[in-house]
Length: 392
Image (cartoon, rainbow, N blue to C red; front, side, top):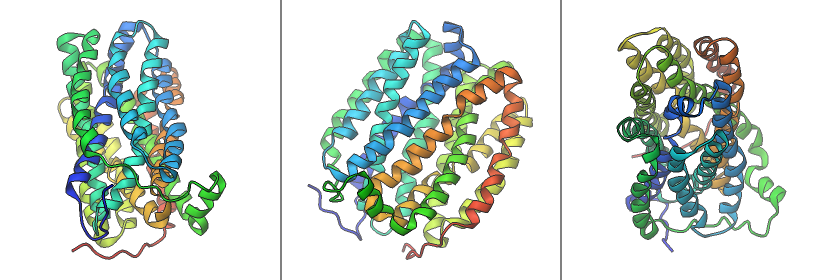
């Protein structure tokens, strides 16, 4: 077992954990940019597309808290590596799905796998981060956002060249990476809660900070509603405006690549000035950035996409880090609430967004959703101040 040093940053283990995040999210990123192709192949409606996206997010809502609860109680790598294997195998199988329900099954199984490893590896990051917990969590988060930047462009280019039916070939990449991860990823360190039941675990982990945890979680849910809705339906909107399938994939790439940059910057600044000012700036500027993106045309839209992604995704790692500081006894569980439960609930509205888009238009629905970040400002003002020693 790896011995942790609270003041030492273990780069080797942090790299392995970030690679788990990157690999799983690389495959998870295949689904959304291919919705236009799946619509053509299987004659899907926007409501059906929204239902697939909603089930995908809902499984995060169900699986991640359970995985986080188990990771805080027991040691073992099965949740991490087994979950990653499900994502690597089943998401590429979506390319050979011959029906809507088969497509739903493959994506659902891949989503379960992705949901399994997220809280476990996120909960391990503080153990190997030394004094730079905020920045290291941002680097870890960068593994996911970079995967969602690279994955859509990779898979849309691959499908245009070889067709949906060739997608299972891409399993080879993930299986090769898993050989290294089998050797490099340590077992999670239990928080010693195996003797406690669910309610006892929650009481010990959250205690008197549950109101602050709830506030942070609610802001993360509302952010997820906006982010997941745009990432799900913007490619469809672009294709309907005459852009190519690859352009839709490029849109997600730019959106998440911008989040990679802003997430690192946000983590660096939060270690020095706290998380609340970063939340306020990002959420205040989110609405104008989204509206600008929707109003642009031609090649200018991609600049708007980058600006929108920069602000929408900036605070994702900060919510996890802030919650872990408030409840350090349940790192994996708290990570699952801020990542899985918030992400899942935020994305679970995708069927509703899809239905509204069928009734009205994708552009109009996304325009209305652009104003939702403003509702988070009063909640952010209530965030607790966490005293942290500045990184040196």
